[in-house]
Image 1 (tube, rainbow, N blue to C red):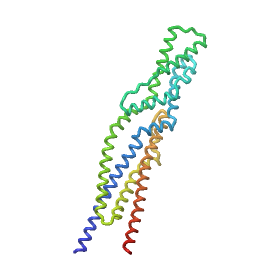
Image 2: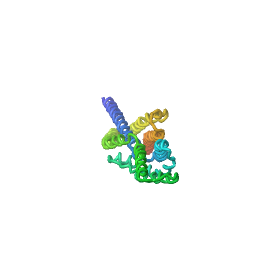
Image 3: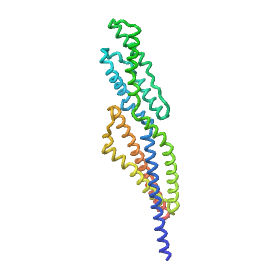
Image 4: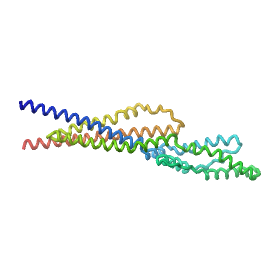
Length: 288
């Protein structure tokens, strides 16, 4: 009778340990995935980092020059009137300023007065070289022409769909934080129950190791598949410089899942070493 009761008690412990181990793996997976999303996809600093890495600002600068040149060619003016009128620093500051404003949910005014003045000076220099008479009408016409062609600048500078994306990030961040905290608390509860259910703590650690390994696998499975198959490269994003940025940004964001998975794997290896040391310590005590 006592043997059956003891066996049933052990089976009950195993069932509860498996249940809490499963729950722990789920909450660890939730925390890991949400942490990876915040580190990767919802990370504003990662956007700025990869804008620099893919030389995004230079590409935008060239796109601005190209679009403006389409308006200049029919006038017969020389294209060099736009040379060095839009410094790369100006493009860099405006692109970053607009993105930052979207995340802060404020308006960003793209100032073009300096660009217009530089272009106006170049036009006047061309008129002077062509020995054309400059009068108030010519100057007014030049100003109006520059004002019309420079309207393309803010449209190209404004990062497509970043305002909508920033809005989603801003709204989701508090929710993600709440879920992560709740999941972390639940994970601690599961670990405490696992430690209390077993007399020998190394046995409890085994179930924790199983949970960590399962969480690592579930965290990296889909991102690893996407990185290997590169299915995201089929996205129809234009222009090319925006596509190049998005590809690198998506890749970096997916890698954040992989790094967190590797961290979980490293934690499980550490716990395995702890379990081995604990077992060896118990064996030494037993044979003293």
